[in-house]
Image (cartoon, rainbow over all chains, first blue to last red; front, side):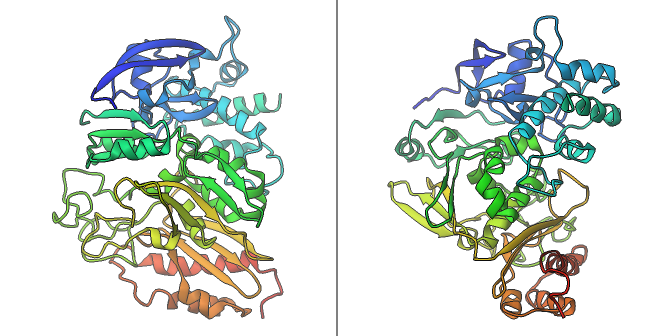
Length: 172
Length: 327
């Protein structure tokens, strides 16, 4: 039982264990940005409503603003910085460029991390609210992409490009 | 945010030990609601006990055809389960209608059941709210109550329970497994889990301090049941229900639960009695649904929810009863 209000936390980010000393109040988002200097993950609303802070935790999408960093200890965190393979961009990163899937770019890291998690959900058979058939393998049309990405807002309104980029990668 | 101590429970007994004698302790599951309320200053725990890694994240398919979903199971796992998708469609549709994929991916089943109202006055610490600050008054009744409750409410509170999933669980007659602090297990039918506000709106459930929801038992759906979940909301995705309905129908049984209208998932028992074993017309469905609102307490800006609920129940009967089956 700890009486401490802060302590050392081992965060596994993009495959590397990082030890940080954190106040228990620190969110994963603030730990990434302010302590690990991984500023790709963006702070938008800080209340789980905009999706700019989306990362993957054990492969599942998460709003990093709503996770206490101390509670994420030992779980595998993937940020936008962890998607590329050296200089080789992730296919979704390339597709966002090719399809103008952004304007100002602020929501983009969250959009891309979210899309990575979303494609894995589809591959795993997870239906969505707009899936007519809950049992069959989901077919990723534009309505499905929009529904599944509804946790990521884009104030520039680059949605048409975002949907096109994701569809291109989903279609292989 | 108030500074707090953090402890990760190593096993269920450890969780109970950690919170013993700690009146301002809270359990942490996915944190998607709790952490937000802590940021807003609505909740100010001194100790956060993380129960998300306790061995309650399983989904067990029982020999009788029922399913046990662990309290720590996150939404992605529930939504991917083949048996749930095949046999409990209203449950899966309700789950998938709630929040965003990010929130569903982290939120646990137990946390979903115990999430707090999204009444804007509850979330705003600068205004009175009997649920947040007992005795301070209800700002919603004379204020912006358009999204709030029309039945089961009181003069002290008109908040609604925001969960979609709980509405479907109510229609499936789910039973909540609770581990008491002394290690004993009690079973609470979901209809008995929540308390109506009365003059103590800050007491929301029958749970005692230290009680831990370890799982939810789903009985097998009735033979030949058809089921669905419909939800009306102000935008197409990522929004709470204005009104929603979970329906489980067989030739002789009708189960209907509403979301968005009450402080808890609201079973329409009067409607169910009137319609069970009948082959009702649209008008009969509507009349039977209105009958369940005899004790409603609508406010000026949310009275529309009653007719909306009537429309929704009529719609699920159209969806689920094949064309030509009615008169």
